[in-house]
Image: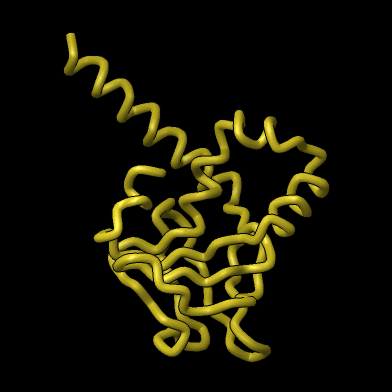
Length: 140
C-alpha cells in the first residue's frame, strides 16, 4: 500500500486519521502501536480510508452520498448536517482539515479511525489469502 500511495500519479481520496485519532483507537482497543502494526486487520482498516479513482474535494461531497472504499463491502456515507462527517458501519469521523493536495490525490484529515465491520475485514482477508494462493500456485 505504501508504494501505491507514494506514487504521485495515483488518483484517490484519502481520509487520513491524525496521530491523536490513532492513539485514541489504540487506547479504546487496548492495543499498543506494535500490536496494531502486526495485526492482520491493519491493511483492511487502512483500505477503509481510501477511495480509489477519484480525488474528491470537500465541495464534491454530497449529503447522504455513498462512497465505496478500496476495501470493498459496505461503503462510507457522507453526512453534511454538522460539518463534514464520514460514517462507516461501525464508526464515524469528522473532517478537521479538508482538501489537502497530495499529488493527484486529495487528503481529508479526520479525527477518528474509521473501522470496517468484521464482515468487511473477513472478506478482505479471504480475498488476500486467495490472491496469495494464486501467486504461489503460479510460481510453481
